[in-house]
Image (cartoon, rainbow, N blue to C red; front, side, top):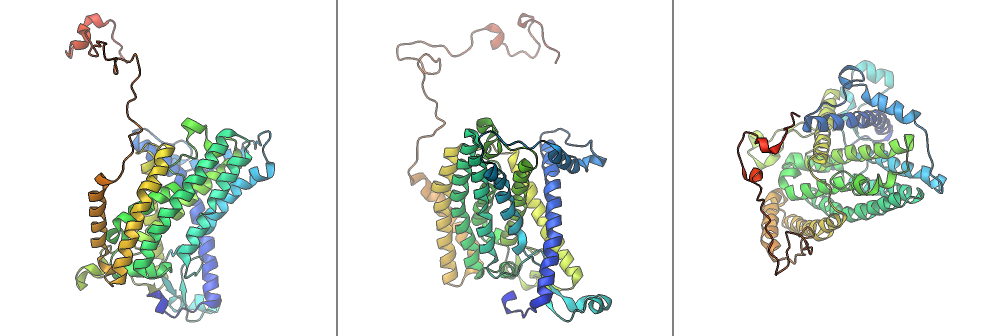
Length: 445
């Protein structure tokens, strides 16, 4: 465990933190820009069409064109809006999103003594061990949850300050949604913390390397946490705060130019940071062996925690690759599942996910108390059996999608009315493959 490793800290760790922040903030900004293009290309592939391919070779300069478009568009402040709060809303959305990633461990622990002699002599570096993260916090996961929860203020404030009923409703929806889904997300996070026995991201990764990835140990927790991550990021099918079919554009209806772009930049930052957090909690971070120590010793291999620059770069590549896969899966879900209604959204959280998360937390507490947390996958299977068995006996509401009888409809006739719903026209009853001339002129399109 990294808690037992004597780290150097001090100035070497501070310099490493600054370098990691500067490097990763540029990587994430580029990831946000090309994440938009990835989503457009992925949606085009799923819908059997061609995505953006005009600007630059294979459309690779499309993000640059989009950025220039946002910069050159006219800024508009609607009449009656609070100008200060209207401008402050996008900033309050993007600042927490950009500040949350600093606790993500993108690599293991770098041994500075392995650097080339010319580098060590030039920089005056002595033997030291430093963590490859933006901030060395032993309560990192709590910091990430706390800082990302502040994003709701920007959305709610932007919706209220716009002086638009559609924006206001979108802000109210976002507030209720984010607050509701933070509860099961926190419970799922507690399940991981109980099993790992620490709030330190490095200890959580080391625990998964020692046993197995939490995706295998706690699959139900992973599903619930990922669902909450979608809801916290306002991603489909939880994009009720935007809901263009109902609210024009939701909380950002009145925004334009770069203030509009900042909202979407914050959304993609949340998606990337949330995906990296999911990779940390459930995909073993930079681990490449998902089963770890649950199988014979000959299979219990993985990347070492401490090493030179080459090992750290490999760990960063693995971590970024896992994050990219989770981001792509998030985008695929957007073009796969329809949007929930708002009552379905709230019902899913309060009547479904929160009780299940409490059950999973109780199971994790029991397994930890008896010291058999390495068999948490058995407890997850037991929780699934309990849910499957108890669900038919739980109180149910009438389906909101039930057909409502309407007087005069042929599908709900009166008791003394004779209605024939089947077609009686001979053309409609003919199933011949050859068009019947009686149908009239056939379209060639």
